[in-house]
Length: 34
Image (tube, rainbow, N blue to C red; front, side, top):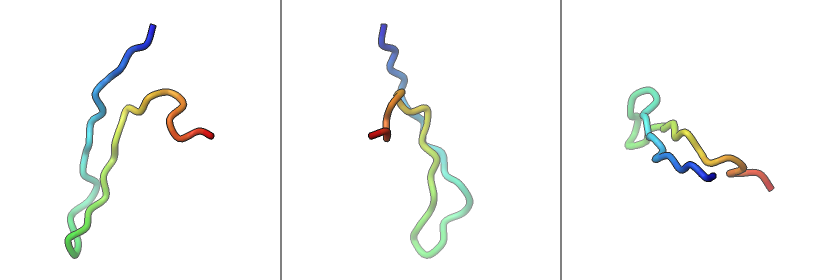
């Protein structure tokens, strides 16, 4: 059975020069593996 969750996006640190890092998770199993 496949369970799909909606990923959450959370900012990391503070914005600098119109840029900011983000954390995204949870990701689906196997995502990004080749």
